[in-house]
Length: 439
Image 1 (cartoon, helix red, strand yellow):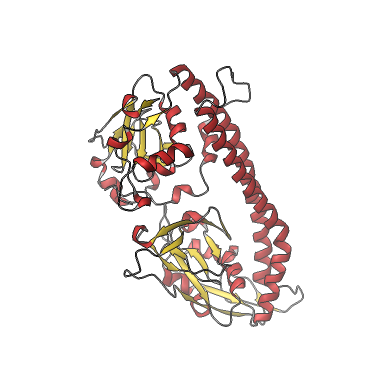
Image 2: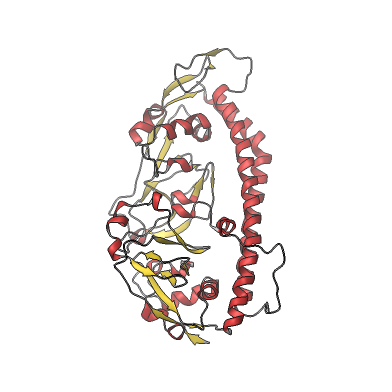
């Protein structure tokens, strides 16, 4: 057992504007950011404030170290001022310590050494980090642990990718069911009429076409700046949602520590659709009674009017015809967005009666039930695979599993592109800190 100050020294170097920007993944550590898709303009304008990290230095986010936001630099690069950069001494393999620092037990220790007024914004400064004790196997054993865990990560990542590919296929099948039902109805013999909308084909003669804003209320209610600071809620950000489903457990936060964009109040029957990064197709129907669901202002909240069955609206918004129009009317290349006024003007065709809308909902749910079950099973399997990985890492880095005699086999091939599957779905769209180091 040694204190981190005996294993690492603090590196504070600025003034290297030509180096690439690095960012952190909670699952796979530090990676080079795609310079073509920067999230914020000011990142580029404030590169002189960014810290240099040399290849194999450890970098961690002061505010998110307790979540595992730490990893070795894959190349020389720049990290945000919200990061701490530490240089390993020869007896420390930074990749081994990256695995160790992301274990649940170690992250609990991080909380104890972090300081701040609000618990979920506590910061782990270098002065505290260097005092933390760490397990230190002999350097050759550290190296062996890293080789072993990377090989296991490659196997696990390929398995996760297989499950995700299955989910994508099942989702595509369900969307075909939705598309057929919400554009033609259930009666194949019904008389059709031109929709008079370029992108929408013929529709049943008794259906009604109106702009979306005539069917729904947009963003009916929001939190104000004078909201009780202690109000605790589940936060729905764009990284939480994929078409028709949540992809991760919603984080509980208090208003005083919430991002300024956490404002949209959600109620049962609302449908939300992302108006930023519209290529993500982040759409979700709220099918629960709750008074603690708050969505990002990156969503438009659609509250159906009296002539619309709420769940039917959710399916319409998920349909390919509608999503394609949202994408086509978005502005921007790297991060396309659609103005809410433009969204409200998009035309939607619906059955004229609630009864028919409900019949279509029943049909979609009945036909899609086996697919929903299979999707849920695959998602649960991914969760179990991740839990297995976390347990394996914890056991290996603490010596509960002895890997000193392990030798890689022909299938233990590690490619960085394979390891990308370890990243949570849409993790890359979660909020990054600004150049000033603030969330």
